[in-house]
Length: 350
Image 1 (cartoon, rainbow, N blue to C red):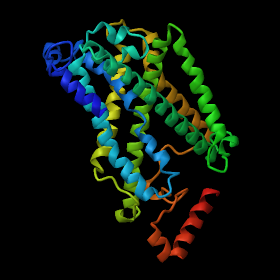
Image 2: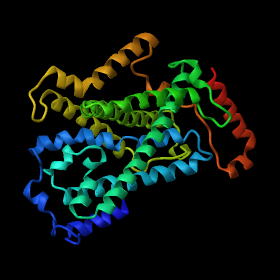
Image 3: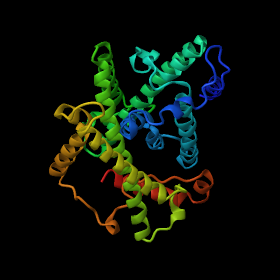
Image 4: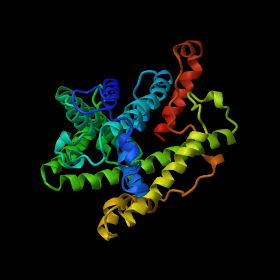
């Protein structure tokens, strides 16, 4: 991505073999393609593309020392998002016209704006290299998706919300039952691309994932706010937390409000889609995940008879909790640490 950004700066400045200096030509000609509604219609695709950073929390359960590894990993996420997505998207909009016929009419990776930019600039070698990078990124995305799906099944099985077979893992900790199910579903869905309706189905899936991602991020922010509120209400000190977000509570509130607004925006786009007449088909194709969340939540409430809202003073902050310490702390206070771990393990199997 660093090479891409630098090369795009050269292209937009007129240093490519073909074409002249582009500058901000496309921005000045049409800042918002299809107006503000066109801008809103791109948000679901952006959410779909940026989904996955929350997987850092899943990895935290298996690293050797999460107190050291997780802050480093989370601290670098915003840098990667800013470099890969925001700055990369800026360079893309400078070098590729929004009305380029290949942008939405190309096949496979040829529809990638990065590939289009290099081809238009007369640098076919970089286009081939970009295709290779796209392939590697797809494999990387598939691997983390298999990891996340299998681990989520393990977690659901341990709270009796999935079959017990998903609890099992081999000696190295690999949950093969979860792997097989996740890869089977993902592999089956991949074959949709061989049909001429693959692009349409992909748009449905991307809308589904976008809304579910917004629900997930919103619930993460809400859970964090409730957790910190309960932590304070139960007279626990913040320094006792293994790691604290330096942007709390502003980032959590901003994330929760932003996710809520974007869910409302998606409802608006589902009822009044861009360039199409309102229809029941378009509404459910774009907003079916909201219906699914409501149905699943209602079914879970009826089945498990769980409380809709829990008093913050009664929230159990130690159930299923894992206790960590640096090696120095373990050496200086082994009995206390052992007692804490035993209490946590005991609660896990209650």
